[in-house]
Amino acid sequence: MSSSSPRRSTRSTKGQKKRTRSSGAISDWRWRDLNQDWRQHYIDLGHGRIAKCTLRLLSSSDQQIGEIRSLGLSFAALAVSSISSVTGRIARADKERDLLAYLQAATDRNLELNDVHNGECTTELAAYHGLEQALVYLLDHGCPLKKPGISSKNAVFSAVKNGQHGSLKLMLERRPQDVRQVIRDEEEDSHRSGHYLSTFWLTMRRMDFAAARMLKNNFSLRLSDRDVRDIYTRNRARKFTGKLANLLREICPDVPNVLHWQECMHWSFSTTAKREILWLLAASSRHVTEFNPLILPNGVWLRILNYFGRDDFADNDDDVVDNEL
Image 1 (tube, rainbow, N blue to C red):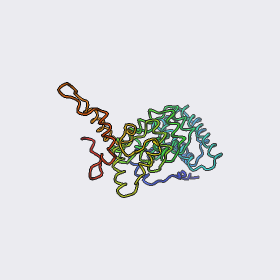
Image 2 (spheres, one colour; image 1 turned 135 degrees about the vertical axis):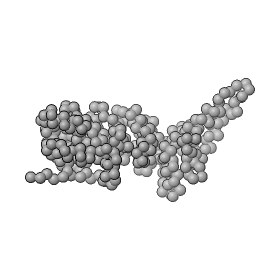
Image 3 (cartoon, rainbow, N blue to C red; image 1 turned 180 degrees about the horizontal axis):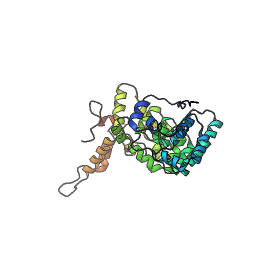
Image 4 (cartoon, rainbow, N blue to C red; image 1 turned 90 degrees about the vertical axis):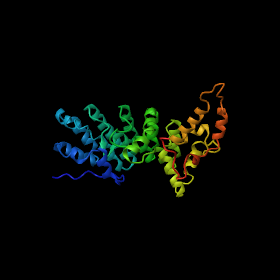
């Protein structure tokens, strides 16, 4: 009897083929040459038969396990993805218990937990689908928030994208420094991959005030130069008019004018703007001697900077000053 293909996820597959080809995800050639047991394993997981696959994982011989271990596979990401189509609170809870048992079996057999399915690693998928118990298990077993060299995205971005505040809270509690690092790397990852990636932009587009507050409290909300370029461009086209101001007012209600520079709002300016402000303040007090007195005290410079708005850091083409200047 021939086996049918795995059930597709309910998530959008737009651009999936291109992402899979370029990101090094689990493509057909990595599993089609495996033995028949693992091919059936792949199909069973695609149909959500996680408990059955757990038993197969535990009963397989060392030689069989070595076959998928050598490829860095455990099919954990596929197991997480298969739960996405499960509806109903009770049914979903049962499936998540099966998933935890599968992850434990993969750990016992010394397999890679954070493998990849369709260009996304296990932690990204668990965060996106709000599988908090599975996410806790993965974080406690050392799985990173992104898979270097596989995808430009990260688990934080995935959680915000699907409005999974529980997943975001777990990552902020257990890996606060890692959250800051992956968001800090987003601008560089965007340049390297060619795909625009920004958690700040995502919170603003979705007007997700809760996610923005959590990230700000962890010092993880960062506005990149690329964000500024797109905000100015879209504001001119009247697509995002007022969204940045609304987001900043919501998360900083005590600040009277969030669009002008202030010390307390320094974090919310772009990378280039923050650097130039710091350079100006540093230059104003450099080499102060009897023959080279301080032109203006720092306090006066701070008052002058209070008149700068966000548009003052853009040129006539609505583009921020180049990073190399």
